[in-house]
Image (cartoon, rainbow, N blue to C red; front, side, top):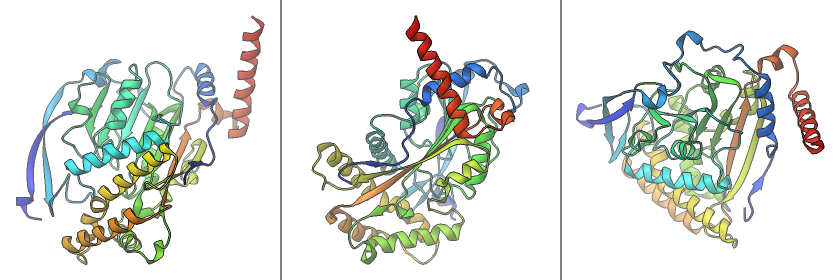
Length: 389
């Protein structure tokens, strides 16, 4: 690649540390209280793989650590800006705008919530991997002012969490596939829209497990268009199907698969996660729903997809040598025409969550059902005692 494509930018970077939505396998609404009950029993971080000798300097080290100037060398290809020579997604203004829209889509899908797992009261530590422009991390910092939010990405956007100055949100330029060096464990590790980002999701999940507190959660959310999550009439005989097949083929060739295999529950259970849950949510795409809320959701989802077609496909397809940039853009234009005209189009959003078990759960060899029943029994007993007062 020609050096002419490299241009430096300077940033302040932290040194460390259907018409109706269908929902399957909903999580239990009492889970937050159950986690609080478990935390009362767990007084030490047992079996943690993170050395206590590497603890941070003080409890506010994440938000007070000094910053330094990092020179970011961007790569420009075919009119788009990228963070390096390999990652297929751009980090330019157009992509930032699309990610802002996608964040609003997720908020509607989750009924205004940012996560489906319980967040501990008080000083929780939360890691947002692949934060992009930081919409999720920033809102988590605002909703949980006592929490410490660490937002990481392999790329730096023009406007991100590091530029907003929130005292409890910090940004780290980091490659998640490299060895993690965090000194303190987390209560929640969040990954969203990262299909195609990693060669080995199993390795990412193992590192996440090792860097969670006992009782801490991992949450993975994805809806990659290349993974076949969109459905509409006559999709098999469409330009859209051609684009999806081309993206999948290019991704497999590079070793960064774009499918839904990383959302299989057994990937988490095999590592040691418990309380693993997989949820699939069907959302409308387009303005065809009659319900006003669904119509708004469908319109925003359609805009996000239309804006993302080129971003998802341009670099991967041109890197194969079988496509020119002009051919990719021409195909994307044909796909846009199909999607705008499609009626009854839907997309599937998948959410995978799991919990690192408490040490005493491992010692007793209890199953998830046994742990849930025991926690529910303690919760009922506590409620009875409250009623007797």
